[in-house]
Image 1 (cartoon, rainbow, N blue to C red):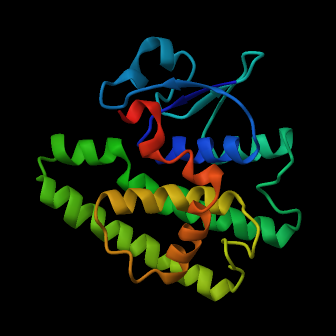
Image 2: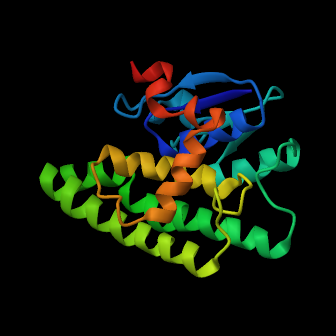
Image 3: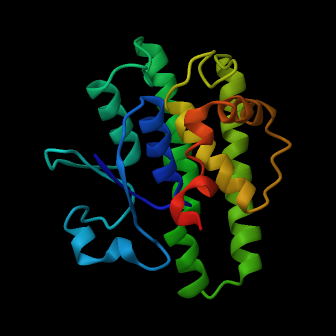
Length: 214
């Protein structure tokens, strides 16, 4: 398999975690967002959205959209699992994942921040502080409240089992740390983050340990 990835991309980090968790080897195809390599015609022929990650299997099938990719991996390579078996638990894991993937991440990804700086003419302080800080605080507060209300978290989002929810949560926390957001109000989230980072699948795939981070 070949994974098109960028070290700072949180969606790419999700796939790196999932592949490492399942012990699946892959060739990394480093795709620089600042250098616009994701918009190269050779890449958009694989992924017309021009986004990372993309996963190409040995038989040439191309898979995109990180959460759909993780569920595909889990069905294709079921051990160790990243999705629970029960209907309610699946809903919960997808719910946590979508709070991150649908409510938090889209407002703060690279192309949105670039547009705010360029087309909207906002300053770095307005983008990195006011915009990013506001949406991270609102999103993580909602996630923290969801975890508390559901009462299903343990070491990880779902008890003591690693799931897709953790795979989505950890890269988002990394992004918030990078932008120096105050994470002290989110005790449950940060506890889960610390337990996850003690695992090789999460620590070995984190952004600073990627070859393209140099």
